[in-house]
Image (tube, rainbow, N blue to C red):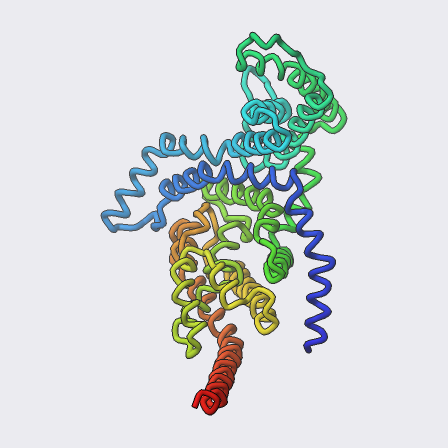
Amino acid sequence: MSSVYQVLITIIERKITPMAGAVGQQRHVIAIRDGFVAALPFMIIGSFMLVFIFPPFSPDTTWGFARAWLDFSVNHRQQLMLPYHLSMGVMTFFISVGIGASIGKHHKLDPVMTGLLAFMGFLLVAAPYQDGKIATDYFSGQGIFTAIITALYTSEVYAWLKRHNITIRLPKEVPTGVARSFEILIPVIVIVATLHPLNLLIESWTGMIIPQAIMHLLAPLVSASDSLPAVLISVLVCQVLWFAGIHGALIVTGIMNPFWLTNLAANQAALEAGSLLPHTYLMGFWDFYLLIGGVGSTLPLAFLLLRSRAVHLRTIGKMGVVPSFFNINEPILFGMPIIMNPLFFLPFICVPMINAVFAWTATKLGWVAQVVSMAPWTTPGPIGASWAANWALSPVFMCLFCMLMSALMYLPFLRVYERTLLQQDAEKQQADAAAQSNDLPART
């Protein structure tokens, strides 16, 4: 067994770790992650408004409070939907500006100008103008991939032109703000001269503008992202990287965020239309069923540590239980430790994967409500699970069930580790006592 573990560790250290490190530090991956982080507060508020607009009560309820809430929502729905449409409904605006600004910082360009250039590039291809109106179909989840591609393209074009001094330079006496405005004129011309004709050309060939063509090409991939194999693969990659000391969640979420947000927009549209929700694997599923207390679902483990007979483990439990409530578990990961600890490799990998199977199956059977909202990842598990599913109660029970299963799976490994530590402490005490007894005659 130890030889198998050593082979696995060698593969992780020599093959996976360098590759994951390179991916995690790649500027475009960082920019995409920064773009989603920039958009996150707007999307959380927009999602919360959607939950408020569609309260979790039966349409025929007679309870006074619920009846009043439902009637108020129905009578003022058009006004109440405005914050949602100006946040979740235009999420691509925030994402494109965030990605452009991140690339701009990397190349030491003005991040505001770079972000605005990325935004303009997105509008050029995703907002066709017809009959005196601008189409908004691709401002939400359907346009995420287009926003990413156009933001990366426009930002890199700007950086390339700047690097080759293809720009308009004004005398030093000109105010900085005015000089920056003229500096970006040529990049704007290049972006307009490339993206707009390309969009028209693709439309003439295929009958689809660029966002439509992108979604058509990615449709199988988007569909595959909402499947149990996709859940298990993403969890496995995250856990293996974390076990090697690499922040695997950042890499996995950076890859999955576009798919999650695309599917979330589809779920929200279905909720607004009163139809069945089409997607299961979304960010709320990841955060509140698979990462309860942090990566590896270690909140139940923190509770177990509080009752450990080993002083070291009990101390780590006291340090880690409060942060784990908010899904921050570095004290446990590095304090026990779990990271690079061969005894905990199997439960650390398998616990969230087994929970994924249970949660996926229960959701597909209709026992657990699906995700329709975004909740901050630091929200305690049962509360966040309910929040993400329009305050339904079934996700609370699912989250608690996953916590119970996690505790049962971690317990035997914890007991073995606890006995090992207690034995080491006993041997150390015996060695100290023997050393003291040997020193006693010499002192007399």
